[in-house]
Image (cartoon, rainbow, N blue to C red; front, side, top):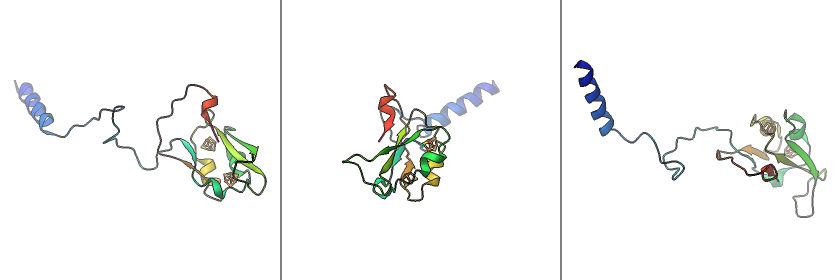
Length: 123
Ligand code: SF4
Ligand code: SF4
């Protein structure tokens, strides 16, 4: 009987309290995304890249490839720029920490579903 009383109290408490879950993926309102989340790899300041290649050297999974700058790309000092093969990225943040020009970032974007590996190349 005491158990039943406790259950009733819990039910009343839940009925009166704010909703604890959100209707994700129909809405993102109310999602508690932690600060500092290591999400999708992005170019934060692409114009600042010098093409120094430090990011590709420190990447433990070989996710960053340096390619020659194409005519429409930001032209770097060395003539090379990084692209990310995101399927290899382990979101360690080494490239972000090591870049002397604050070019790269791991964003708060956590929905990372792709239909092919080609779609995971971030240029
Ligand atoms: S992103 Fe940063 S570390 Fe990588 S090549 Fe450009 S400047 Fe160098
Ligand atoms: S976050 Fe880590 S694994 Fe991903 S590209 Fe940067 S260094 Fe490589």
